[in-house]
Length: 559
Image (cartoon, rainbow, N blue to C red; front, side, top):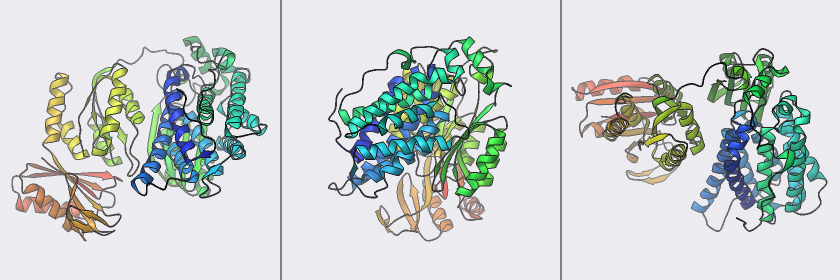
């Protein structure tokens, strides 16, 4: 459906582009996955690009929502929207292709935000942004290879350089240049030629650029045809096996894909690149200003993570073993893994709880404070659980709509999903404790829902700003005790506030107290609270877990 074109590149154009690109990648995801043979034929390039753009879109929407909640007369600047787009893509980047796309968007944002609060830019600004994007992405890849998304990005930038006119004219030239470069990729990369496909990452970038054309002209360009279409081809087992025997994969290739976000200084990242380059291949490090997204294929996943620890603080660590059916598995020597009957997928706020949930058999999605997972990330976790039936625990009231969207998407793929509306990780712990995969699905869901609902929850946090609460006015730095989502206690001492919260909860009865300590919780708080429970509530047991970097100083559950 046509929409009103954007005359200039402004904040609204960024928002429109992200939305159109997300929709287009959603339609093309399966086709792009199907032609994915390089650097690893694991069939997830389209999905990774979709998840990356979904994260960028979510970040841009959050910026607009923030302004709408303030003064309706004001809106975000081009710089605000472009930076949000780049940051969202960076923290949500998936796979080799998604990581490179994140750097492409970051390169564009550097140009689009160069004027600070400038409201918009024209065709010349778009030309410069596309050139910066292509150049910065190439620099982010340790060993650039022609015939990949890098070639397509360069083709787009080269064509845009020769275009004169408004943003629509420049965007259309970039799209046409990208299409021509995409059609040429099989001649540049032998694995593509043998499989009879174009580069999957490049195909995804063409889809994103088509959305850019639609943003500025109001009309989507004609679908790809001829050699550039590529997505109508399908990768055969023989082609996959040939890819595994290619020059980049002489010994079967690295066994693991390792991705993590990293907080580190530039000098440390430079040393990290050198170390990771020696450990494996497909190395891409993107980002800047202290935050980086690291992607590499290695045999020693632990060494890749340790290198990140030495460089700074890695988090959102994802390690994927290249499984049956991808290039590193030698063309399917073993039959596909049978689906489990039932699995639990849970969102958890800290590394410690992620370990606890994993030990209990759950597939986890780590939520960093202030950066909730997108629905696509939850869908991916449901797929990763590889089960016919899935119980989904969002463990956060703010994630209920996101989780519902993920559940609906998974159901369209033939997976039976039950969403239990857990509002805290401690409710998820209670639900997981009564989970029994052997009983009927409906009975298991009812039992888990009942256990979660019977668990009251609380958290102790530090106030970030002055605000009105149910317990009065708090100041920045005050200690807040929230019971069932509402502020019940305002204090100055963490331990005293936590004790007050616990007394309020236990005054209504209870048999078990669950304490989950964050990294910033004061020493001795668990021992103090355990002692308080023993002295004042004789029939109540206490269990303590280490949650890690979870945002809250303390999570409390009472069953």
